[in-house]
Image (tube, rainbow, N blue to C red; front, side):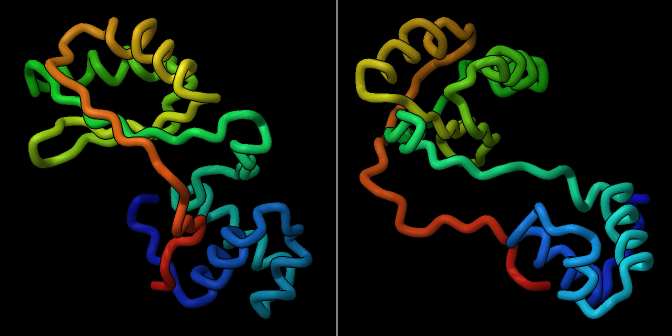
Length: 156
């Protein structure tokens, strides 16, 4: 269903679900001006098309003792498909890595990492990241505070 074309009602459904993924179909249908059955069908189609990838709960990382966010730019020794795949497979199990992006420019990969404190991050670097084969160089930047954080995509 990669060819699924969304319309204005789908956009309303997606917006409401981004704001509150726990809405019942009944609540969602009221918000978007549709009866529950067609609303449920649309949600199912959006899921089947891969537009809705899943449902999660946002957790306050600071409240759970992980107040430090670090962006780690990684330069690899090689940028071949095999090297990129090997790196991705190596870092996937690292639970401190929240996001991993393939980048353009001088750095190949950008990681968003969370930690309890500087010692925790140092341990992550020494015991996990720096043991990944194929890394030429890393550069870490610590966030001071989050200025903007969005969970909703812009209106289409």
